[in-house]
Image 1 (tube, rainbow, N blue to C red):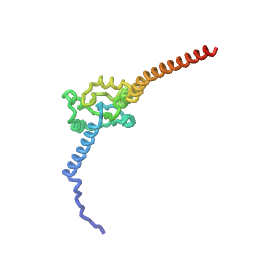
Image 2: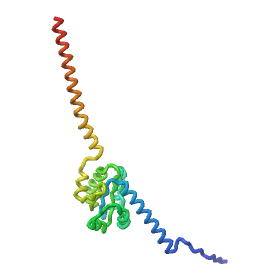
Image 3: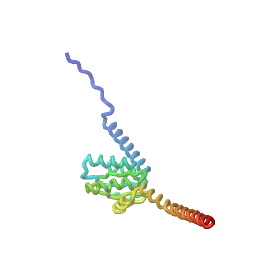
Image 4: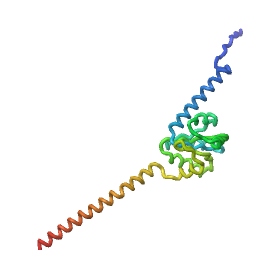
Length: 193
């Protein structure tokens, strides 16, 4: 015996429901990227074509360790999230090819050093341009920024520079005190004889 049951139409399979769901997902992605843009001190836009999935994941892990994010997304969604950043038409043309973005949140140089190391090893990804504190940087400027010492190294150098004069003052004061004690002992020895 065969029973046929009427099939209920699923509301979620209608084209309108799928379109609404896709639009909501895209708006969520734009909001997430807008948050990343707002939190980041620097952004570097790269063409990631030619990188394998494994290499992309390696870049993402290295970025996470340096308090940064390396993210691949659609150019149209990325451009919508960059509405607060002033980009020239020339810069916007860079978004015609696939783009991955490096968002640096605390130390700007360390994530760039990791990216530069990957570029040196693999010859990929290709840097398009960058944004630092709202100012657009060329590819060459981004590469120069990657050669700077990291924030921790700069702090250590500054501390060393500050510590040097204090040590010199300590040495000269100690020397004068030693000289004074030696003079007193010499006077004591003279009077004792």
